[in-house]
Amino acid sequence: MDLLLRFLEKTAWKMTPPEPYGTFHLVFWLTGLPIAFLAAFFLRKVSDKTDRRLLFSVGFVLLLAEAYKQLFYTFIVGGGEYQFDRIPFQLCSMPMYACLVLPFLREGKFRRALCTFTASFGFMGGFVSYFSPESMCLPYWTLTIHSFSWHMILVFIGLYLFFSGRAGVRFRDFLPAAGIYLSLCLVAFGINALCYNCPGADVNMFYVGPKPSPLVICRDIVARFGWAVNTVVYVTALTLCAFAFYSAYLLLRKAVRKRAEKRIRKKA
Image (cartoon, rainbow, N blue to C red; front, side):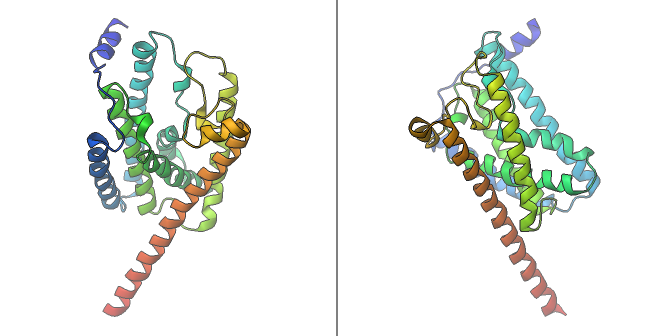
């Protein structure tokens, strides 16, 4: 335990939180996006065996990073008391679990649905976070780098599942993915209710209440109409947003295929 505490203390490098759209944010974002895109593109044709190894490796790296964050918040930020608002059950945590589970699932409807959920909702969570990075700009170097890297990895996972065709390839394939999201929202609400008075800041997994949402726009809805109305609006908005990303992927996929078919016809 002493060794662990010393390690956490030595990595608790304080920093002035970077400004949203400042140098740190923009450099990380504009550098990470092309790297994630190229990595996903070049890995799109790997075998099923390599795919399973890749997903598990990414999931394991995320698990180690999450373990570090949990320990850091408990012993450095919380002074030895667990911070229940840091329970790893937010939307952006789900790709970690999916990457650890997917390698052990047989090909089938559930695996496809989980891939589609991870690609659409996971990619959306990682990508959109960079447009409002306030929660990623933290007073410690390790936590800030952790958060920025985590969300970029979500972008990579989503693009990889899209490019490799392991996510859904039809519009109706989105429905089971949306079902997974709604099911996870119910679990998240249960956690929030059970941990309502637990130590830490407001416990609000998936930001579905009953604690007020800290998110921009959502907090105004809560103040005026209450958390229940905000939950319906927020969950609906996220589902539609994920579907928009998924639709864009399907349309792009269709356009690329048509172009490839034209080339083949010309050569023939």
